[in-house]
Image (tube, rainbow, N blue to C red; front, top):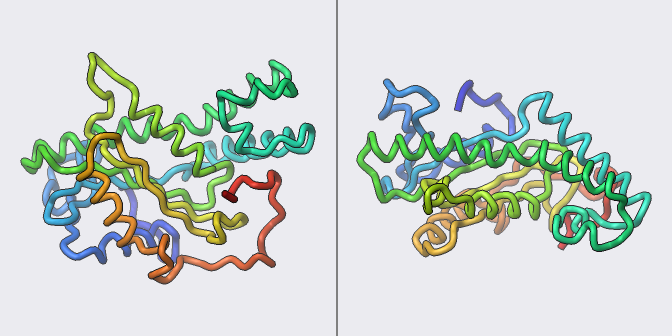
Length: 253
């Protein structure tokens, strides 16, 4: 992390929840001499989990990329009646026979410009988690990237999952490129949309083959609390306050 979170912000809300987990340790207190680029943020559960926290789309340039992508998807829906789930599945968008080659190419460019930052964040987190493991002598710790999305235009949980799974599959010399990232957890706050009736959504994508990683991912989600409604939500959004969605069914399953 860089500068402290603003009071009342969604990031501060999530950070408070992380700090409330019994035994949470700020890695800054243990690795003061290491630069930010070489250390993660938290140790959890008796040092069995290393968490690196990221905030997605917090620059004006990246927010603008999300806005352009969302508006283009909305325009395609109005033109062809294809919902966003179909448009965001790269194996299906051409099979409809409706979109022109130029539209497909532009859609993919906008999507890649916006979502490729997920891979960039995983690359940085992989280095930070690896360095933390080495310095603190925790080679078997589960590496977790926790990414906060605060009212980011264009964000769709299904596409986050697609992009993370693809990143998990990237190999370098026969090994996973991001091998120190075992779990990707996202926490979204959506001001204008609901997902399964909630304005805040937490989810996780876990690398295949690690039951231990799955167990800790579930513990983190339970401690964040929102999925089960067991904790106070960040903010509530009534259906009367929801801005009409550009693309129906984007956040409904």
